[in-house]
Amino acid sequence: MPEIKISIGGRDFQVACQEGEEHYLRAAAALLGAEADTLVKQIGRLPEARMLLMAGLMLADKTAGLDERLKEAEQKIAAQEAKIAELEARRPEAEAEVREVKVEVPVEVPVIPPQLTETLAEIAARAEGLAERLETAQS
Image (cartoon, rainbow, N blue to C red):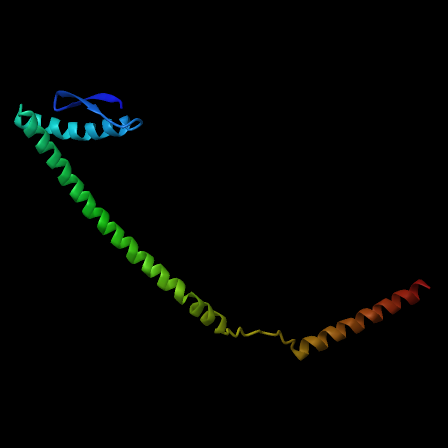
């Protein structure tokens, strides 16, 4: 079982841990050490037991606050998941409503005025007459 040296509040400690857990122990010691350093800066030198107790209580207070925020976040997530489930349950109904909606789009059919038809017929007749004259003149 490995033993590592940690420093908390300016004091060194030899602590044993499970194989492969050294990193976690160092991280935990760094958190406790940061709280102890804050205490030492504010109050000054404290007995070891008191310093460790107070630093532990400060960490416990932070942890309790984080636990409360985590619970609130989990409740919000659960509420959002319930809304999603409700919307997914209503989805077939909504899709059916969309399919049932019939939209009639008016289609405009252009109407050619009779005068235009007559004018075009007259122009076509003149063009045919001119074409016949040209054929006769060339022959």
